[in-house]
Image (cartoon, rainbow, N blue to C red; front, side):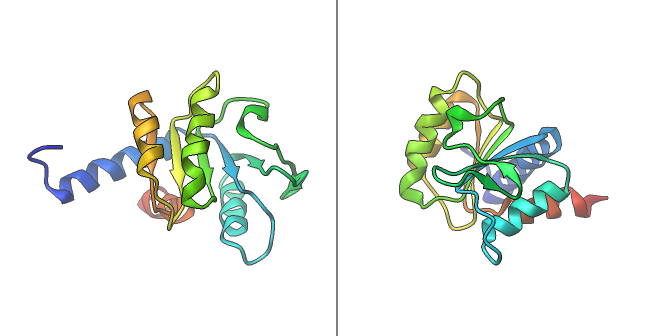
Length: 149
């Protein structure tokens, strides 16, 4: 925003992230797999432990963390609040298009640490979907919610 310092912009962003995390109850994890030692496994188990309803999304796996896995976002049995991506950046625009085709809109499209996509951001922000890039959902949840108490 014009006239806004980088610090102010970051504070606004973290406030929006905290608000979404507080309001959210369900998360679709795209690229989900319960492979010990993988970041996606650690984050998925953490979110389950924190009480979120998790919907694993993987084109091949039938179950992840003992839960039914869905081949794509359109196959989810209900709308979700957050779509959390564990996919390489080149796949993010296609997932953003997938989100735009849904009959519902998530509150947030979250690209995990190391993942950025200006194209996905440009597609989703006009739809009032919060886009988070290059941050770990687990780390931000612990920092913004768990540690604030």
